[in-house]
Length: 309
Image (cartoon, helix red, strand yellow):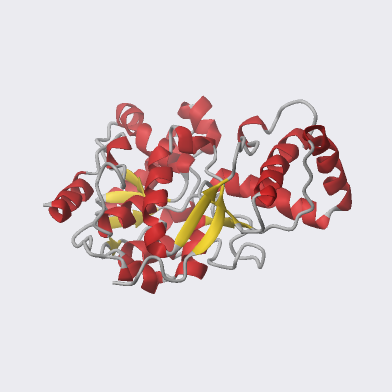
């Protein structure tokens, strides 16, 4: 097994709002596996919402832009490390704002005018990166494999990327060029590195309805049904995703889908970092946070117990 401290690299970590509630299992499991993969996470002090939840407030784009600008300014106060976030919406907003501040003088001036009220300033000299891109480009599959002491043998995983994580930055230079928009493979690669079987899964970048599902689920249940149905037909034991909103929607609306369409879905939806935590032989609750899933990932829990026993 490789030494988790060898070649450690520090990143300034932006957890995002979902890490405090609906995606606490993503945050918890990522923090658990990071040190084993040579990743040191230093959380942004006094961070705030990236603006994903308030994107349509009065005042145009500036309030949302300034929110991410504040996080970036706070991160810059802590040093020049790359900013890492695991949430798709946080990445989309924070990376997008960072690129605008870098490239557009007018945007940078307006953001800094707003930040000036709190004696903050940011000139766009940080890089914003998605956790999965860091795992692909900085860590690598071999290092992930090197930490596996409890291979997830027999576990079939449907990798559901969702529509935000790879759009619009994944295949760009500023986004690390770590995968494609249409047929991303990184989730399949993570699952296989952990000893699981990645099943063929066509709707890996289909939309779950996003925030529309939260407010008007009747308008999007058919979208989620297609995602779950394809995974069931592929024989998956779990769906794995990197996106907090995807995880929430696809898991919590299965009962509503069953009532509306007469189905009987009960398929767990986990985060890739939970798979890693179990494969690394870590605790099912304290590290993998499997108790936070609404639908119990029974096979994954059994694999964790096997390692503990």
